[in-house]
Image (cartoon, rainbow, N blue to C red; front, top):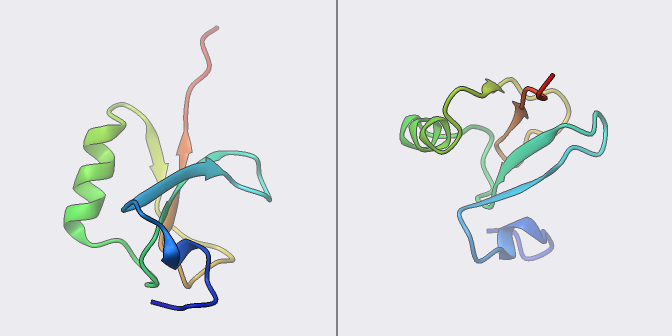
Length: 74
């Protein structure tokens, strides 16, 4: 836990937010770590069935996060 980090102070396991860079929905861990555990990945996949998830992190490496590519209805 990092006392100067707002995410580490979170009351939840994950936050769902919008990426500041690409404006795509994303899930961010409140733990100060670089990657989700296998169990966390399974949980996220179960929460968002049928949604393409990009697990690769590009810029932020101190809080595990993933982008959710939600298909828009035609």
